[in-house]
Image 1 (cartoon, rainbow, N blue to C red):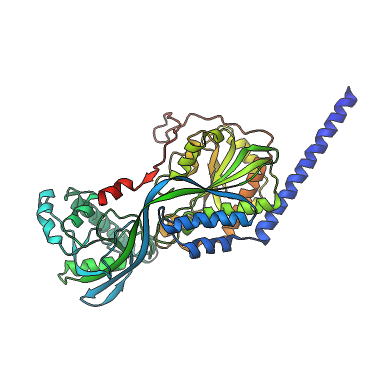
Image 2 (image 1 turned 45 degrees about the vertical axis):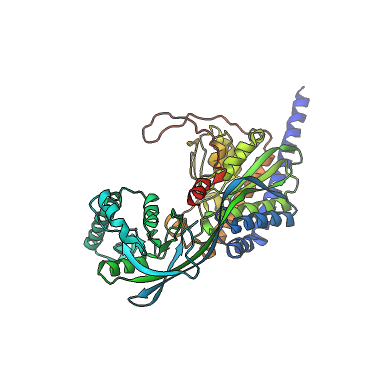
Length: 521
């Protein structure tokens, strides 16, 4: 009997060492391929420079889906575009804004997403500012005066310097003074808009209904040159966002009685309802093909920049991981699946649609890894409320080179995510889904939804490290002997310390912009 036990122990040790050697051989190949044959710069150029911003419903969004599908196919990876709904279609044309009086200057700005078009050739008109009126009755009495004019509705900035500039160069007294003055001014402006009886969406509509020829806004990001570019609520006339500098100049000219005039030529086209898709690609599993290790990143973006860090980086990261694994691990134990989601920016719609449309797959997803928030090295992983996530995530991370993982912070078991990015669509359905959160690189102010979210902000060394980490994690999850534990904790409200509920799956919006479109006709 002792001889049998000795033989069994030796047998297990042999195959354990063999499996470990196999793991290391694949990991070494992953690292070598990522470092010596990276395709990240090519992918970024094709997606960001070649296709551009990817607002849902635009031709560029459709072009991005088709490009991703074809790119996967060139690598020998199965891919398809899976329709999940329809969205209001819009095709952006040129935006050209010029001050004509009291002197001539081309202004820096762009039309907001889904903005109506200027008349052909554009229109010149006087600029006015939303006045400080007594109440909503006074606002209604004032409204006829906007006819034939452009109306400025945002607060100007009292300083165009970010706070860190003041901290470095200003006196403590001047910095405190400008902060106090800014706070008081912003509060007063909020009261000014509230006294109209309108909100941020209904105010522009009231102005255009009264005959305004356009609405002018400015949403500074508190970094030099960066403005947030979101959507227009006007239905008949253009809404444009101006840079802090040009908006402030126009505002001061109006306030001093100079009666500036500008010419806006903002061309766009409403293209009706357009189909919306997710791009799905897979490397079929060899032993457990009906079990999945999943990658996740949204493909859509806003349209102020080219969507480089939100979420071009997540997109090219997951494509590069799939390319690497197809080359060095072509016959994975489980199927490796990737989802490039549409319409994340309007409410996680693509990933929610996938969860709703494929309920039979959810119990078979081993884990999902999502990446969304910028170009930096992966720096934080939360257990998302899965009790045993520390065990398997920890083991898999230990296979990644220390120079990549040494600064990663983990929080286990953590709380389930309930918003923000696509992994939460799967977490709500009970899938162990994890967001690979990256270092900031001032993401929130410089690039997140701004006009500066462009190719030049990418840090390819960091994305390359992320590709190595993610590919190794996917490999380890594929090779895991059994499905990982899905045991969940009771979530805790961190503000109150009280237990709360696990998030529940939410249905996507499958007819985006339809109500708006019907009202506008």
